[in-house]
Image 1 (cartoon, rainbow, N blue to C red):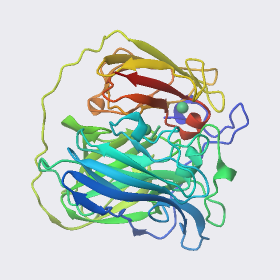
Image 2: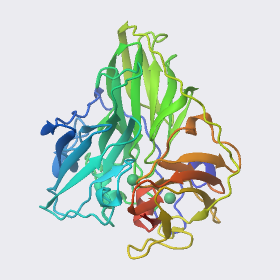
Image 3: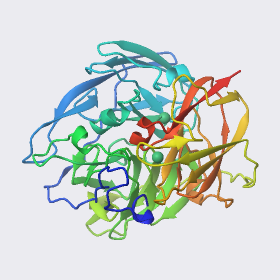
Amino acid sequence: HMMGDNGMGGNNGPMGHGAMQELQATDEPTQPLPIPTALQPNRVTGDTVYYTVEATKGTSQFFKDGKKSETFGYNGDLLGPMIELPKGKTVVIDTINRLDEPTTFHWHGLVIPADMDGGPHQTVAPGEQAQVRLDIDQEPSTLWFHPHPMGLTAEQVYKGLAGLLYVTDDAQNGLPNEYGVDDIPLIVQDRLFTPNGELDYDAHMNVDGTTGDTILANGAINTTFDVQTETLRVRLVNGSNARDFDFTLSNEAEMTQIATDGGPLERPIPLETLTLTPGERAEVLIDFSQVEDVAALKADGVTFTTFRVGELDKASIKIPVTETMERSTDETADRRLTLFGMGNMVSINGKTYDPERIDIEAKRGDTEVWEIENKPDMMGGMTHPFHIHGVQFRVISRDGNPPSDQEKGWKDTVAVAPDERVKIEITFTKTGTFMYHCHILEHEENGMMGQVNVTE
Ligand code: C2O
Ligand code: CU
Ligand code: CU
C-alpha cells in the first residue's frame, strides 16, 4: 500500500509537502447511494447515437450541517452521468465547456484514435464546444471520463469532474444488468474538507497527490443501498486523485471479480480483498444469500457504503467462463520505461513531460512488450499506477512471475510497486499521439507523462 508499505505514513515528505491523510469513519447520518443518471441520447439514427456532455460549475452540500461548496460536474453539480456506448455503434458527443477555464474530455479506456481521445492537446476553451465521433469496438466494460488539461487535471477531477462510460453489447451473458437495481456503479474517492464542510483543493493540494480522510461513493458520504437481488453487480471505479483502496465486505457477503478495466475476466475470481489504484476499475458480483440484514463495504477497513438486505430475488446467475489463453511470461521487452521519484521530482526515463516531444514511435498493428520499472529512491518510493491512452493491454509478468488471476483481463492502468518490474503486451490499433502516465493526478501534472506516436 502506498504509504503504509514504505514507512512514510503520517510523515511530511522530504520536500515539505503535506501528509497522507488517514481515512476516518464518519458520523454523518446515512443517505441513499446516489445513482448517476443514465444519459439519454439526443437522438439515434441508424448506427449512430448522439449525446451532449457539458462540463459545468455547480454547488454541492456534502455534510448535513455543512456549507455548500463549489463543485464541478458533467450535466449537473457533481460527477457526471453514465453514458452507454453500444459496441458496434458510432457515438457522437457534443462536448461543451461551461467552466471559466480550459478543459478537455478524456475517454479513459476507450480504444479510439488520438484526435478523439481528449488528452492535453484537445483543449476546449471556456464557452466553446467540440464534437467527437467514437467508433465503439471493444469488449463490454466499465470505463470512465474525466478532464485532462495540462496543469488543471488534478484540480478539476478533485472538484468533481468524472463520469461513467459503459461499453455494452447485446449478449448480457446472464449477468445482472438492470442499471441502478442489480447493476450499480460505485465511483470511490477520498476527499478532504474544510472545517465548515467545503472542498478546497488549493488548501489541500499535495505534490504527491491530494488525499482526504473522507470517503465518497458516487459523491456522497456514508451511503446505503437497498439490495433486492441475491447477486448484485458492482462496478467499482477508483476515482481518487492519489489513494489506493483495499475493498472488503463484512457479514458473510462474498465478492467475485468478473471484470478488469477493459472487459470480462476469463474466469470469475472469488476475492476477500480487491485492491484498486487510481484510475483502475473492477466489476464484482456480491452474493448476499448468507447475509442476515446488513453488510458493509469498506475501503481500508472503513465502512463507506452499507447494503441493506431485505427479501431477495433469487435470480440464478451463471457466470460465463471463457477460454484461458496461455501466455508466456518471459517475452523480451521491446521498450523499458523507468518510473522514478516523488513529489515534484517525478520522471519517466529521466524526463518530464514535454508536449513538443514524442518519446516513443510505434507502428499501428504492431505488438510490443513494455517493461515498466519503478525505481525506488532513498525514501523507498511509492506505487505508481501506470496508464496508457487509446489501448487495452495485457499484463504478462510481475518481476518475471505470472500476474495474479485478477489481472488476467484487459487493462489500461496497472499498479507498479516500488522496485517492481511489470511487463505488459500492447497492440496499438489506432493512430495519433497518445499519452502514457502515472495516474496519481498530481504526478501526471508534475510531468510523469510521455507521448507515444502511432503511425501507419
Ligand atoms: Cu484517466 Cu490520461 O487518464
Ligand atoms: Cu486515459
Ligand atoms: Cu506516480
